[in-house]
Structures are given as C-alpha cells and as structure tokens.
Image (cartoon, rainbow, N blue to C red; front, side, top):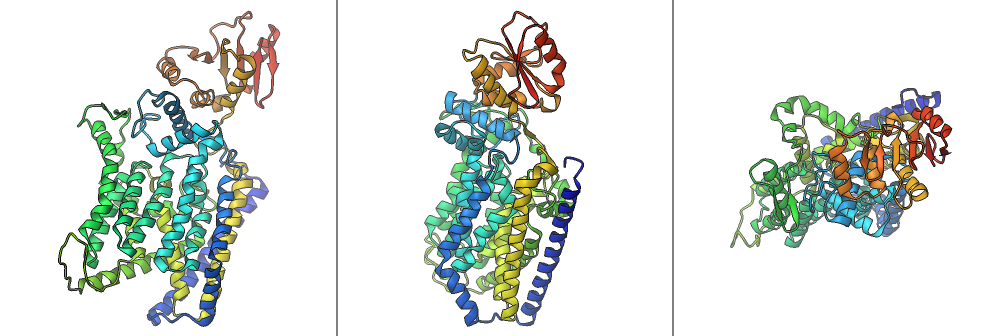
Amino acid sequence: MTGYLSKKEFIMQQIYYLFNHLSLLAVSLICAVTLFYLLRKPAAQKSSDKASESSAEINSFWIVFLLLLFAVFLFSRLFHLSFLPAGLHLDEVGVTYDAFSLLNFGTDRLGRAYPVYPTNYGDGNSAMYTYLEMLVLKFLPLSVISIRLPAVLCSIPCFFASFGIVLEMYKNRAAALLGPLIVTVTPYFFMSERFGLDCNLMLSIVTVALYFLTKAVNREKSRYYVLAGLFFGLTLYTYILSYLMLPLFFLLLFIYLMLTGKFCIRKFLSLCLPFGLLGIPLFLEQLVNMGILPEFHFLGSDFMRLDVYRSSELSLSRILKNLPNILYLLFGGDPLVFNSFNEFGPVFWCLIPLIILGCASGIKKGIRSIRSGSNLTLNRSDPLSGSDNFQDRKPEPAFIFVLYVFSIYLVSLLLASFNTYNSNGIYIGFAVLAAEGIMVLVKAPSPLLFRQISTVFILCLTGIAFLLYGEFYFRRQIAVYGKLPVFISTEPGDMLKYVEETYSPEGDKKIYTEINYHERDYADICIALFTETDPSVWREYEENKETSSPAFMGNIAFNFPEEFDENEDAVYILGTDWNHIVSYLSSIGYSTDTSFDGYTIVYK
C-alpha cells in the first residue's frame, strides 16, 4: 500500500472486510443447511413445476443472458486498459521487446533465433505470449494497449469455454451460464486478463483444453481427445510449471479412467500424443539447460542455455510447510497486489464455501463412479478399438476437475517461494467447482423456497462483490496502492520518443537522460522498447553499461557526460532530482521544455 490511507479510504476498506466476512458466514450457513438436508434425505427430489418453469425461461433466452454477460466481461477487461494497472510489469516490457525484435530482426533482444523458451531477464519466460505479441505488433502500433491485447484476446475463448464446460456437465444452458458468470467476476480472472504477465496465459489456454477434455469424456469421441491434447500441449508454452502439473493430471486421469472401467488406449493416446509431440521442443530445451545436450540450432530455432536455471526452486522438503500456507494464499491472496488486492483476495469470499461444497460433491460422484465401474463385467473384443459394450456410469467431470485442482496444488507444494500466479491455472478449477456447489444447492432435497431464496441471495452477493471490486479497481486502487510492485513507469520511454521526434528527428544529437532515482530501475529497457531500438544496439549497451559512464544506447546516454560542453548540441532529460543541473544548463544558454510533469527537457 501507499502507506497512509485517507479517512475515506480507511472506512471503505473496513466496509470491504465486513462485507467479505458477512458474505462468507451467510453462504457457509446456506451450505450447512443444504448438507443437513442432503444427509437426512440423500435421494434427490424431482424439480418442482415452478423450478422447472424458471429454468425453462432462462433456457429460452440463454443467448441473451450470455451476450449480456459477454458485454460486461469485455467492458471489465478493456475499460482503461492503457491506464490500469498503472505502468508496465517488467515482464510485459521484456516480452514485448523480444516480440518486437523477433518481428523485425528474426531474433529476440539477446540475438537468439525464434527460441521456444526466451531468456528475457536471464531466467526465461514462456514463449506463447511473446509470439502472440509479435502477431499483434504486425498489425498494430506499439502501445500499452497492444502490449496487453494478447491477454485480453486469449481471455475470450476462456469465457466461452467455461460456458461449454458447465453445459457439458449439466446439459442445461441456464446452469451453463454459471461458468462465464464466475469467470467474469472472479478477481484473479479479472486482474490476470488485463496485463501481459506471460504465465497467466495458462489460465486461458488450459480452460479451452479442459472444455475439450470434458466433451471427450462425455461423448467418447477421439477427435475431442485430440483437440484436448493439442490445447494441453499449447498450455506447455504458457508456463513452465505446467510441465509438471499437466503430466501429473494425466496420470491421475489415467488411474481414474481405469478404475471406472472407461479407459480406452486409443482414446487416451489421442490425448497424449499431440500433447507429447508439442512438448518435444520444450523437452529438448530442458535437456540443454541440464547440460545433457549441447546448445544447437534446429529448424530455425536456437536451443540455448539460460543464464539462470531455476530447478533448485523445487524440493520435496517443503511440502509439509506449504500445505496450509498455499491454501491460504490461493484463497486469501499474496503480498504481490498485481495478483489480487488484500481487500478482496483472488476469489470472492462468498464463493469459497461453494467451492468446498462443489469439491465434496465431485469427490462423492467420483467415488460412486469408481464403485460402479468396479462391478462391471467388461466384454472387449479388441482392447485397442475402444468398442466396449457395457452400460455404466460415465466418468464424472466434477471429479475430473477435483483431480485437476489437486494436481496443481500438489506441484505448488514443492515451490520454495509461492505466489498465486504460480498456480494460476487452478482458478478455472475453482470456478467449475463453485458452479458445482451452486448446482448441489439447487438440486438438494431442501424446501423449494429455501433453494430459490438461497440461489438468488448468493447470486446477489456475488454481484454486489463484483460491483464493489470494480469500483475499487477503477477508482481507488491507485490511491490505496499507487504503482504496483515490479511495475515501471512508461514515462521515460514516452519522453525519449517525444525528444527524438521533436529535437533529434535525424538521430544526430546525443540525448542524455538522468531521471529520478525512484524510476531508474529498468528504465533503460523501457526506453529501448518505446524508441524501438535495434536489439544489436541494446546488446552492445548491455555489454558496456557496467564499465562505461555515461553508457550509450545508440545516441541515448544514461547519466551525465563527464564534462558539460556549452557548445555541444545535445538534449538533456532531467528529473526533479536534478533541478540544480537544469538551472546550470539554462545559465549557459540552453532552453527548457516542461511538457512532461516531473521532468525538464533541456535543449539548444
């Protein structure tokens, strides 16, 4: 936080906390009453005529409701996209500079040709965002919006895939609206889809993969397994931890399908083969970094060692310590407020009891399907054909999502330092399990009036939470938090571009920059990006910056010259920390330009 909160902001903060606690308590009580009726009368009641009529009305106009939700979704992702979050995340800058370099020069900024795992600041970043950004820059000029556009574009199929997942689970369009509703309002989805942190693409891409997997399990069609495998394979290019999370999930899925008697080698291979084929380049990259393979160039791509290989961040010794901590962080948020605000967390508190209820329901359904499968007599003419003739309960999608959530959680337990973006893919699991929890409540053998009031009450609570959250995000977050951690100002880049266009259109003048102390970190790469500096010039600057003062990046110098030459036709960009230098240069014949707040441009 910025440190001191005004009285108004403090009062609003207490209102947020009070609302969270009361909504958590209220929904917990509703879930407790629902469980009471489930335990007392486990057999589900038939839906009443009134309940059926209500559902039928929504089903009749489902497309209208879906489009209204989509309008809210798009507005929440695009409104003030260039201003909020303020500044640019370090990875947004690095990834975009690599994308610019690849588009125009065929290498990233470090000179590596079309890498499958770009080096970025030394420890690497996932490639998907870089190449999507490269496509965006091919059609749009460089700007904060074009930098963040891949995140927004990938969130759109995520929105519709969430509808498809819940539709496959319940075969009811009214129920299916719960998927995009929860995706639209959940804080982690909201925040992660508004800026270009490369790993957050996992959440969007894996949602599409899970949609095809749910469809494949329900319809038993190989083509859906192939599509699921393709999107799971693409997910590998969104986040390095998916290398562990997804194979573990596949292993648990394999065991579950075996136990239910629904395992088919051909169909499972249809899932695993495209996944494995897409993963081969990344596997080779890991072998290079482990020293098993030398660096090499193949099919236009460089496979090079990273400056920092972070394999030591995983350890079995941390599991017990992380068991409670990671659960708390997944629901309560972590100190990095670009993941979630302390006032709201990554998931609204009113949804947490529903996620737990949905998880319990999924486990119960999974156990029931396993018991059903274990009592079957299988008649297989050809074990490879997939033509099994038996009647049984299909694998339960809700339990598959429990397995998916558990896979991500288990890998997260191995991490030395955990932030919620490490497990960003888990939030689609939470969204689906929350929908399952709501459906348990709707179908429970409790009085109809209780179910109707409870459902409307929960939806209203969620809507109020979303309105409070949106008001905070768009109106209060800067007053409370200022610029978020590891976000940098774009002003140095904007100023350099302005100076080059206004005072050095031919690029023949030296431009000295000495910005304010608190904005120095990573200002150089931001300037390189927004002035569209040739990556070879950047590499030369990187090699010399520790030994040269001032260090030059083309005609741009970072720091003052050794001596001021009153005859030099140079331009200076000076922050308010250097007003005494502005006064001196003005006294020897330089003019000033104060077009940018907090800075003075001094020129001949």
